[in-house]
Length: 386
Ligand SMILES: Cc1cc2nc3c(=O)[nH]c(=O)nc-3n(C[C@H](O)[C@H](O)[C@H](O)COP(=O)(O)OP(=O)(O)OC[C@H]3O[C@@H](n4cnc5c(N)ncnc54)[C@H](O)[C@@H]3O)c2cc1C
Image (cartoon, rainbow, N blue to C red; front, side):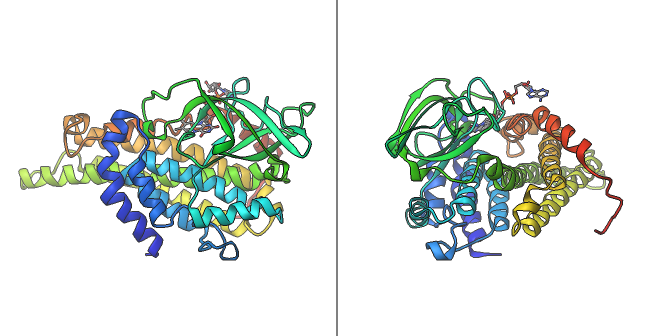
C-alpha cells in the first residue's frame, strides 16, 4: 500500500465516514474530510516533482477515490472532480509561466479546484458553450450561467469552458482558470438532491476576469478527449466501485449475522450475495482494464484521441454507473428491512441515493448517443490479444 493510500484510508475511516451521514442530511460541504486530505498533501498528488509535487500517477488517484467512496461518496466525488482538473492542468499547461506557477501553488498550498462546464442553454453537452471569452487589453472577461458548480464557494479556483471569442461557434471552446477571488458568484439554483448532497453543486451566474495567460492554449476539444473525459470516467467509476463494495460489505455482515443467529440454516441472502459479488468483480475488472489502457496510451496524444479508446472509456462510465445501482440494490434486498432503515448498521439508503447520481453525471443517454457515432466509424477488431 502506498503512503498516499494509507493516508486516504485514515481520512476515510476516521473522518469522512464519521461525518458522512451529517454531510448527507444537511447537504453540507464535507469540510472536515477536505481539510484532512489537504493536511496530508493529497490534493497536489498529480503535480510532477519538477513543480514541487510528488508526481503520483492516475492509478494512485483512482485507488484513493475508491477508498473514499466507501466512506463518504460526496467527499470522494469532490476529490475526484478536483483531480480531473489537476490532471488537465498538468498535462496541457505547456510552458505557460502563469499556469506553471499556479501548478506549483497547487502543490505548495494544496489548492482545491472546481469545474464549470455545464451551462444553461446547452445542458449537459460539455462540448458546447454559450459563454465566450471577451479579450481586451491583454485580459479576458466571461459570464456563464452555470446550472451546477460543485463546491464553488469553498474552492480556490474554477476551470471554466467558454467559446474562444464571442464570434466562435459553440464547439470552439477553450478552458480558463478563474481564481475564486476574481469570480463573482451570484447564487441561482440550490442543490437539494436525492444524493451526492455534500458536493453542494449549486447553480450560479459566474462572472470573472483574468489575465490571458490563465487560458490554456490547447483547444478544449483536445483537453476533453485526451484528459478530462478518460480521467473523469476512471475516477468516477472508482468511487462508484467503492460505494458498491461498501454496500456489499454491509450485506455480507448481515448474512454472517443471520448465519450466527440460526446455525445450520443457510441464510436466505447468501446466494444473492454471491451473485452480487460477481457483478462487483466484473465492475472492478472493467475499471482496471480501462486504467491499464489509459496508462498505456498516456504518452501519446494520438492514442488518447483514438476512437476505440474513447469508446472504451465511455463504455466504462455507462457500465459502472449502471452496475453501482444494481449492486447497491442487491445489497438492499439482502439486508431487507435492516437495509431499508436509516438507523441500522446495515442501512443502505445513503449509498443507494448517492449511486443514482451516476447515470445523470453526464447523462448516459448523451454518452450512448456519442458512442453511436463512434461505433459506426470503427473498424472490426477480431483480435483478442492485440
Ligand atoms: C453530483 C453531480 C455534480 C456535478 N458537478 C458539476 C460541476 O461541478 N460542474 C459542472 O459543470 N457540471 C456538474 N454536474 C452536471 C453534469 O456534468 C451534467 O451536466 C448533468 O448531470 C447533466 O444533467 P442532465 O441529464 O439534466 O442534462 P442533459 O445531458 O442536458 O440531459 C437532459 C435530458 O436530455 C436527454 N438527452 C440529452 N442528450 C441526449 C441524446 N443525445 N440522446 C437522447 N437523450 C438525450 C437526457 O436523457 C435527459 O433526459 C454535476 C452533476 C452531478 C450529478
